[in-house]
Length: 108
Image (cartoon, one colour):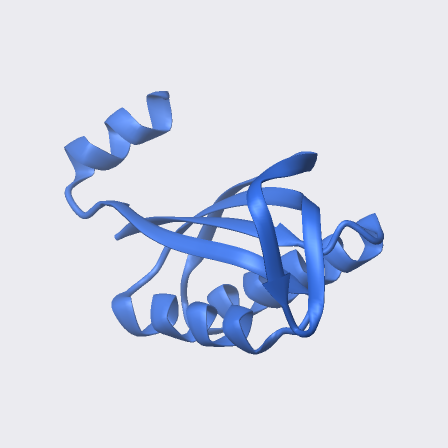
């Protein structure tokens, strides 16, 4: 199944974003998944002010990762992201499970 991970990291440094993307990617690869793409969306204004780990954030550094994996791998990625104190917000969305759905999503 194809999933998209949209993650918002503290806007402190690009190094933190790379570490988090690498951690998520290695978790996917170690469990037999395939990473299709990673896009850096740079720093952006959050829709509303967020309080996370006793700090307030107005901006965040976003990245998008598309990956193929099974449901347990997706759950493990969510667990890892939820435990990382550098994360502000994240979301994992199932894009499709059939080849036709995945081909349409890849064309976008």
